[in-house]
Amino acid sequence: MPLLIVIIGIILLFIMIAVFKLNAFIAFIIICLFVGIAGGMELEAVINSIQTGIGNTLGFLVMILGLGSMLGKLVADSGAAQRITSQLVTSFGIKNIQWAVVLAGFIVGIPMFYSVGFVILIPLVFTVAASTKLPLLYVGLPMLASLSVTHGFLPPHPAPTAISGMFNADIGKTLVYGIIIAIPTIIVAGPLFSRTIKNIKATPLKEFYNPIILKDNEMPGLRISILSALLPVILIGFTTISNSLLPNDFKLMPIIDFIGNPVIAMLISVLVAIYTLGLARGRKMTDIMNSVTTAISSITMILLIIAGAGALKQILTDSGVSNYIAGMLAESSISPLILAWLIATVLRICVGSATVAGLTAAGIILPLISSTGASPELMVLAIGSGSLMFSHVNDGGFWMFKEYFNLSIKETLKTWTLMETIIGVMGLIGVLILNIFI
Image 1 (cartoon, helix red, strand yellow):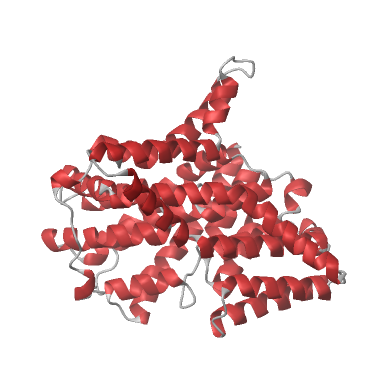
Image 2 (cartoon, rainbow, N blue to C red; image 1 turned 30 degrees about the vertical axis):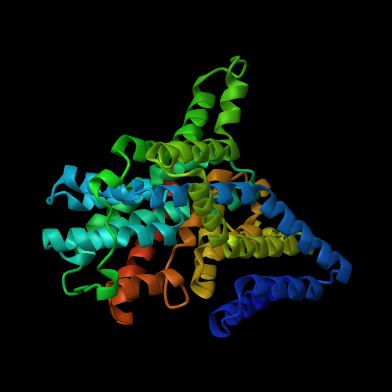
């Protein structure tokens, strides 16, 4: 019976979001009420559980995502993203253009949300394709593969960060493992896959092909651009490496751990970017603060959706459904990493949003962490991989790609959907290989 309640709840969630176009946060709250009441919880307990789930989820994420959106806005508005991309294209040359856009997508994609990175980099991809006379998909897919992988695998993006918090996974290790898996995944799903697409010709719509491109003297230097965009990764990665190499009683270790804390790392990065990408380039503080305020408003709905997923996770836990499902899954001989990936995949296909699929799957699979001894960091990445599988018509990213590249639905399925599926499968393979050594 508990499993049936969850299945019905997930189906209803899908119907409300995909069919009736109901706001995802409202849909989550309704499903929380349904699962809680149908599971035998008292009405007051259901409300308390929802409040607890939202509070526990947002308590950590508000700072991470808020500061992350500020950094992304500063990187975009200053021209740092354009500087990184244009310089890489110039340095790599036409023959290696795919590797240039891959690296640009990876660097820009780490501090930015997927949709922001997409909008910033797509006009540059159009320009590069036109100037080199190369097929648009040949240039565009490798960049999108990078953006998608960073979105699904790597903190400080919403789902990986939130799931890391749920599983008590070390964010530094998750980031390091994620990068290890991301590299071959991007290579296969981006440059290699795009070379197999010969019969599909993308032609960008005119309104997307006339972007405002900053002049060279209007952009920050390359070193400052890369440092500002990647500073969170540098700080968190430095702390993770230090913890593995230095003794626990090292005198400076508390300071190193403090600086490498994701919240502090993001705060330091934003403060540095305010100076390097703002004040140092002559922007007034009031203008910079208006930009970061705009950035915060852009993630409000993302935070609410994540909060709704956190509420559902808490309902599944408090009602005993998670333990019931975990008990059933624990008897299975299938690896918990594969199970986590499968659940996230099914939810991704049904719901569309990678963030929603990942967080919902995390709530269902959470009890398996303690009972199986699986690496929480690898579980985060397994769920992240599954949450990117088979993007189709109920995913906003599907339509962004279709419209910007001016493709039919059939062509979008053959390109975007297949690329996302390759990323999901490669991610799982990478997780299973890493599991042998960790």
